[in-house]
Image: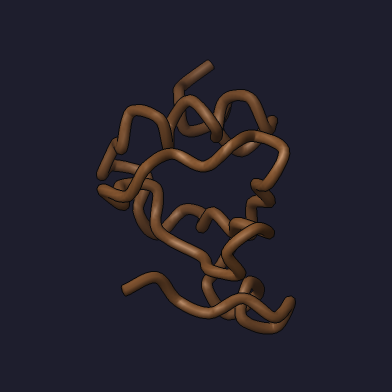
Length: 72
């Protein structure tokens, strides 16, 4: 299984991607943070949010539709 397939499969794999700030995954999903109301790309240099506050969306449009705003 490739890492891309693993990312599509579960929360834990996607969370590891955002911890590593891997740019290869930009455009494949976005991370939304409930405590701040923002969403970011996987390579965002901001501090990694707590797992309990994270939701993943397939697109920025989906995160926006759910009420999140883009990271600066």
